[in-house]
Length: 357
Ligand SMILES: *Cc1c(COP(=O)(O)O)cnc(C)c1O
Image 1: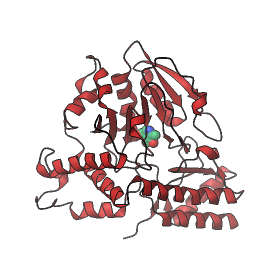
Image 2 (image 1 turned 135 degrees about the horizontal axis):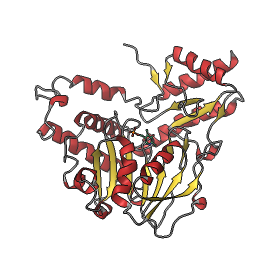
Image 3 (image 1 turned 90 degrees about the vertical axis):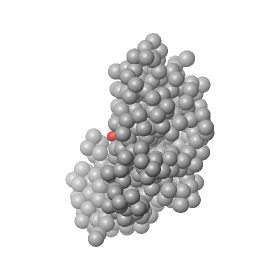
Image 4 (image 1 turned 135 degrees about the vertical axis):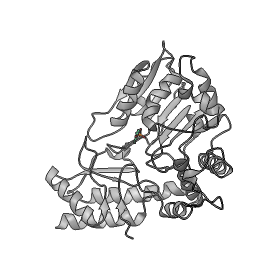
C-alpha cells in the first residue's frame, strides 16, 4: 500500500498510527464484538472514549475548571451563527476582525443574527496579513470580539492575540492544538476538526461557562451552548466515530510531548518551507512575513500556467493537494500537526528541481 504526502487543507492528513489503531479496532472495539461505528453513545466503550477526548484536550490546552469542552456538529460554519445566537442578544453589537475569507464568513453568519461592527479589515491586503492590535477600532461595550486565528486560505496567522476588556472569541479551525495558547484569554474557542484534530463531523468548542448563561429563551435548545454543557455533549447522538478519532489524535499529541513539542516541530516544518520560498526569486510568499502561517504555507509562481504545471508535476511525485484555494489560486502547502517532516523535505527538494528545470 502506498501513502502519499497529503498537503490538503482539510479534511487533512491524520497520523498514520492513529489510522492503524482505528483500523485494528474497526470490527471489534476492544472485546465488545462490535465496532465503535455500531456502538451506543451511552455504552461503556464509547463513554470512555468521550471522556478521554475531553480529558486529553483539557490537559493539552490546560483548560481551567470554569470552561467547558464540547463536541458539537455542523462544522465551524454552524458556529458562525451559534456564537452570536448565544452571546450577542438583539440590541447589542459584536466586534469582528475581517482578516480574510473565513473571517468574512463568520461576519456574514453573525450579521444574520445581530449587529456587527467590523473593527478592522485586512481581507483585501496583498501580501495577506491579519490586523495589528493597534488597528482595532473597538466598540465600547461590545458583547465580544471575534477573530479568526489562522486564515486557512490566504495563509495569514495571528502571532499574538488582542486582550480586549470583553470576551475574545476565536475561530481556531486551522491552528487549534498546533501550539500552546492561554485559554483564559478567550471567552470561546471553536474549531472544525478536519484540519488539526481529526476527521470532519465534529466541532470542538471551549467556552467559559458563565458566557453560556447569556442565551435568550428564543434560541432553540439544540443551539444553546448551555444545553450541550448540561448534557456533556450528549444531548443528541454525537458523531461518535469522529470523536473517537479526535481522542486518538489527542492521545498521539500527548505522546509527542504535548503542545510545546508539537509547536517546535510545526515551526521547524514551516521555517524550512519559507526558507525554500525566500531563497529563490522563482517563488513568492503570499502572506506578509510577520504574519505567515505555520499551518498553511501559501506561495505563487510568476504565471498561473507555471503554477498549474507545478501542482501537476508535484502530484506525479506523490505530493498531493498543493493547489491553492479556488478563490485565490497559487500554491498552498497545508502542514498541520500530522504532516510529516519528510514530506516537507520532499517538497523543498521538488521545488529546487522544478525551478532548475
Ligand atoms: C475550514 C474552516 C472553516 C469551515 O469549517 P467547516 O467545518 O467546513 O464548517 C471555518 N473556519 C476556518 C478558519 C477554516 O479553516
